[in-house]
Image 1 (cartoon, rainbow, N blue to C red):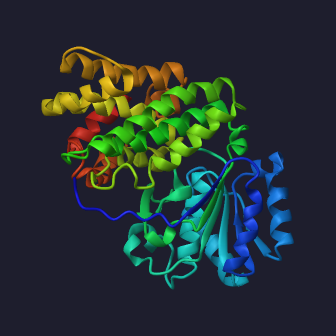
Image 2 (cartoon, rainbow, N blue to C red):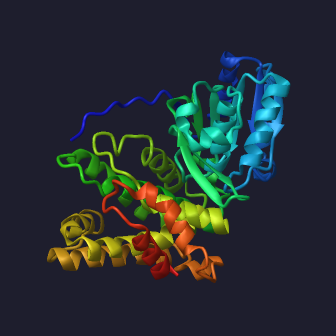
Amino acid sequence: MNNFKYSIPTTIYFGKDQLGHLAELKASGERVLLVYGGGSIKRSGLYDSVMKILAEAGLKVTELSGVEPNPRIESVRRGVDLCRENQIDMVLAVGGGSVIDCAKVVAAGACYDGDAWDLVLDGGKIKAALPVYSVLTLSATGSEMDNFAVISDMSKNEKWGTGSPLLKPVMSVLDPTYTFSVSKKQTAAGTADMMSHTFENYFTNVKGAELQGHLCEAVLKTCIQYGPIAIKEPDNYDARANLMWAGSLAINGLLNGGAEVAWCVHPMEHELSAFYDITHGEGLAILTPVWMSFVLKKDPSKTGQLAAYGRSVWGLSGEDQEVAQAAIDKTAQFFFETMGMPKNLREVGITEKTHFEEMAAKAEAGCHGSFVPLTKEDIVSIYEAAF
């Protein structure tokens, strides 16, 4: 196991009727930028509840609405401008991971003299940020409790992740009832996203990190148990609660501290989203079993770890090669049959291979040091197999 530092300064208020804690924002000042997406929080009544609490706390609110599912740098820039024009003291995101990611980079951009895109390309340039708070409405990215954000510049077909300890939210409200209205498609995509985060941590080359591996297995089994229930029974509190907490734990550093490994499926999917603007979780679900199959073929020494996954998560038995392949099949079956997700790139509207070479060239840098390092040619092969 490697040495590591673990620090999560985010205060979590988890469960029903936690929204009143938004009054604590007044500890950061008087002027808040409220960031949200396409208006679902208004239809659900959450917007009115938030505004009422903020008003009662004496906070002055400026709004940044219309944040995209793959948040754009243009939205970030609008938010930065609003912060400067209104002397904003803090940023409150109410929504899913995309909204929170946008809010994080807005908070950093408001404290930076240059263009916010600089901070996306190089998180090391983030030297200060306004305090970030969040109210989570979609279980998926874990952005409510981590130091990462992913932003797109569609004019360049670029989607990059950035990170800084300064981006970790001060406080996040996690009320599972706010996810009752999430559609079947987004519930499935969110489950795939948190499972992918867990896979990226689970398949590591660090020896001796047994506890981290077992924690990953617990998160995966939780997603496998409760994802289908949430789809069939969208107002099942226990299902939504378990998924919500699994999403946070999948990427808050608990699973990978001491067992760090570079991620590779995420960089590959970011290119799909950058060029085709597809749903992130769906892209991850399509790529993951293909990546697993490629790993099994390219590096037979990884067969034992894939087999361990099959035994611990899926309860399989048999010889390593047989169990490893069966585990991949079980993963695909869960995503595509149980959760009803698209099976290949054509089903999400990608009908040509024109950009595969360019996408692979960009993704390759993110795959250095991954479970099995991938070349540009390897990544092209994975895209083609997923096509």
